[in-house]
Each structure stands twice: as structure tokens, then as C-alpha cells.
Image (cartoon, rainbow, N blue to C red; front, side):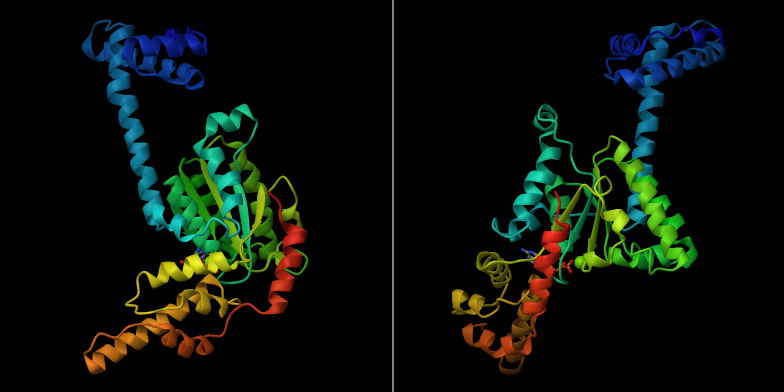
Length: 359
Ligand SMILES: Nc1ncnc2c1ncn2[C@@H]1O[C@H](COP(=O)(O)OP(=O)(O)O)[C@@H](O)[C@H]1O
Ligand SMILES: [Mg+2]
């Protein structure tokens, strides 16, 4: 293997590969590749019984070996993602969120732009976040926001629920988490989403021995993920931010802790109109109805629409005439949906916002 010790400097390797094969490679990877090319030259020469030369070896290696490895890595990645139920999300989901709905602006500036404008981010020393937490009362749109981010970036969306991690028994949670995080951490263009995060990352003081090991695993895995220079995100969501282990919430672990909730009238109206546009509707006084549902979360609005649509569907089935959802239909159904938000929940959420928000 004498020839393998004669390897030029990284930049030199990269420029030779470019010259011989027309393919551009990063200088760091170039040296490693050059070694493989020299090895390939030796194998090829042995096979053909003559010295094939560096130029031909490089060309053959880049065309037939390196490219084939690359595609098989890509298909292995896709296989892993599909096995985990990974999805592609429509870009349009972002448009169902009004500009004023928190945390749309924060998400756009702090999460999406650093990935879509990498040169500008680099110029200003802005490091894209890699690990995030969304918190807020149930149904406020935490999952919706994470899906919207995957849609805008056109990344894979992989959801791992605490029950998936527990499928092979309580004592395998930490190991499963490690496996998934290590694998996804190496991939580009993926969001790993863990919902109901408090279930696996609860406070270590009042958790069992197993729970402690999971939180410890996360404390280990998050810095590893962040050290890799990849385009991926770990996003965790919780309804109970106060229940998370304090060590996880300290700066240095999660880059952003973002509240989802606090819908204003415009935000509620955008969601309302989004659902209304897919409803068999007649005259609807949107402003009046929206003013009556100030304690509704987006999930409650969705449920209200499920109810009004069911009514007109059944009416039309019985009477056969065209049945329309109108202001009256909403007035009838609103009292039958109990809103998730109460003044106490809002107050508690506002206190959590002050205490935990960071981005
Ligand atoms: N602009 C919006 N913001 C948040 N949720 C929305 C919006 N428009 C529609 N929705 C719907 O409202 C529901 C919100 O629930 P979800 O995101 O699951 O809440 P959480 O994860 O906070 O419990 C989802 O069904 C989502 O599709
Ligand atoms: Mg959710």
C-alpha cells in the first residue's frame, strides 16, 4: 500500500478530482476520496493486468463507485424515513396561519430564514437553530406549526410519539431515542418531531429511574445533534412546559423555547375562513361568529366546523334539498362546543410565556 501514503493536501486532492472527473467535492472530503481513488486504481490495474493510470481510475471511481454509494445512501435514508412514517407536507399549510398569529413571525425570522438564507445568516453570524420546544395549551397549533415549517422548507416530517419509543418496553425508551436521534442527526432536510414531550422528559426529581435515564440520554444527544453541521431540526412539543426537567430548559440545550397560543381576532378569523371555504355555506356573519368564540383554540374551531357540517349533511340526506351552513347553524352549535381555553388557563400560559420563552 505504498501509494496510499503519498496523498496530497486536501485542496490539491479536490482540485485533481475536479480536473479528472469534472465533479466538485469539498476539500475536507477530497483527501479521503483521493485515498479511495488510489486504492481503486490499484484494484483496477490488478484486474486488467496493466497500469490504468490515475486519470482513468478517478473518472471510473467517481462515475461508478462514489455515485452508486451516494444513491444507495440516499435510498437507505428514504427507507428509514418511510419505516418511521415520515411525510412530505404541503407548502400551503403555512397560508392557513395569519401573519399576526403568534408565533408565525418568530418562526419565520428565527427558524425558516436562517435555513433559506444561509449566506446572509453566515454574514451576520446567525446560527440556524437545531433544537426547539413549542409549548402552549392543547389544540393551540403546536403540531400545526411544526408541520407548516416542514412544508415551507420542503423537509421530511418524522413524528415520534412517546408510545412509539415505549413499544418495546419502558427500558428500551432511552435506547430507541438514541437510535432515532443518531440516525436523523446525520440526515439533511428532516424534522424530527416529538409530541407530548413531558411524557419522556419529565422532571427528574419526581420521576422513576427509567425516566431519569431518558432525560440523561436527551441531555447527551442534543449537543451531539447540534455539533453536526446538518440541515435538520429536533422539535419537541408540550402542553406542560413547567413539568419538563429544568436541566433541559437551560440555555445551551434547546436553542428556542416558543409559545404557541394567544390567538387574536384576526388569527381566529383566518382559521375560521379557512374552514368556511371548504363548507357548503350560505350567509354567514363571520365577524359576529368570530367575536363569540374568543376562548376557542384552533382545534375547537375545527371541531365546531365538524359539527355544523354534520348538521347540514344530515339535513340534506333527510330532505334532499341543498342544505347550507348559515349564521344560525353556528349560533345553534357554538353552545355545544366547550372551549378549551379558560381565563385561568390563559393566565397560566401568560406566566409560562414570561418564564420560559427564549429565541
Ligand atoms: N392557523 C392555524 N393555527 C393552528 N392550528 C390550525 C390553524 N388552522 C387550522 N388549524 C388546525 O387546528 C388544529 C390545531 O391542533 P394541533 O396543531 O394539533 O394543536 P396542538 O398540537 O397544540 O395540540 C389542527 O387540526 C390544525 O390543523
Ligand atoms: Mg399536538
